[in-house]
Length: 72
Image (cartoon, rainbow, N blue to C red; front, side, top):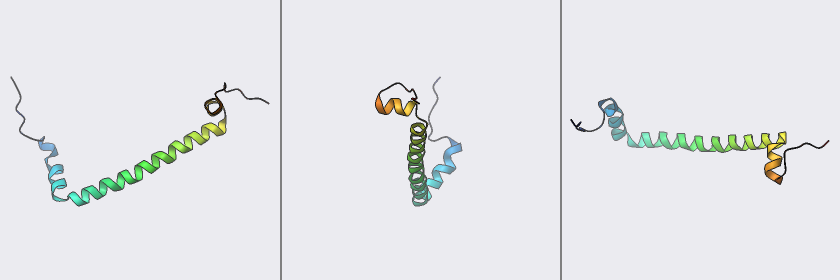
C-alpha cells in the first residue's frame, strides 16, 4: 500500500497562502530576523571568547600553545 502525495499538508496550507499573497512582507520579516540574529551570534561569540581569555586558562592555552597553568 502506497500513500499518495496530494500536495502540502493541509495544516500548512494557510501559511503557504499567506506567503504567496504577502511575499514582500514575509521576505521583509525574514530579512529583519536574520539581519538581527547573525550580528547577535557574532557578539555573543566574541563575549564568550573574551571572557575565556580574561579568565586565563583555556584562552592562554589556545593563544600560546602552552598548558593552562597560572604563574604567581
